[in-house]
Length: 115
Length: 115
Image 1 (cartoon, rainbow over the protein chains, first blue to last red):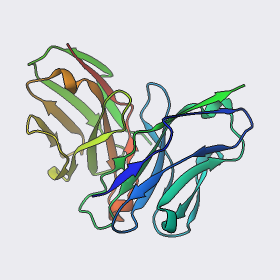
Image 2 (cartoon, rainbow over the protein chains, first blue to last red; image 1 turned 60 degrees about the horizontal axis):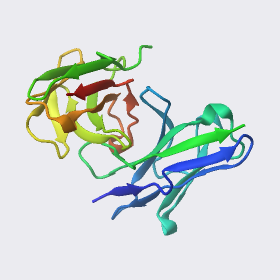
Image 3 (tube, rainbow over the protein chains, first blue to last red; image 1 turned 120 degrees about the vertical axis):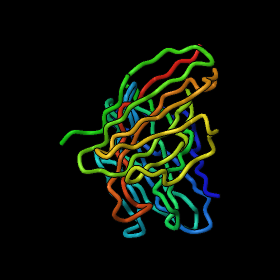
């Protein structure tokens, strides 16, 4: 069965500092991988996704993630944090061989950005 | 282009009651998925509808049921509400093309409180 682990339920960075949010997956085959962001009292917005093309994926708002099969990881990074990046971030997987595009989510990482 | 909309935004029910949540998919999207997001958790897949048929189901009891209409809008019905059903219910729509890599677009959610 597929699963996702997000290390660090809370991450705090200073404005302008590097953002690194960790995601590791467990799957018998390389899955499709997604990062979503959730602002308070809102739904989820797609930041980026990996679908077996380029291993370095660039998303919206300056975020990017690198798929590393050897480490079963898909960590999310941004070179310089902005106050507006404060939100909850979810990593998710879907099964390329599955009948649906259902997503299996991690438990999320709450990012705080300090001025 | 209209995004995914959900109604109502908030709902308070008592244990044992029944509830219906509604979702309008993004224009042209014929697949709708429902997720339950408990406080402090990632979303959990409930089920998916494709062209008015249930296309996949997560680990939820039968008292969670759904419908999809010819215009691709959808309903989630929950019978015999329990306290643990208190959560944010998210609807997501997608247009099947690549299967598991299809992006899901989320609505803002319905916050259900069961007293």
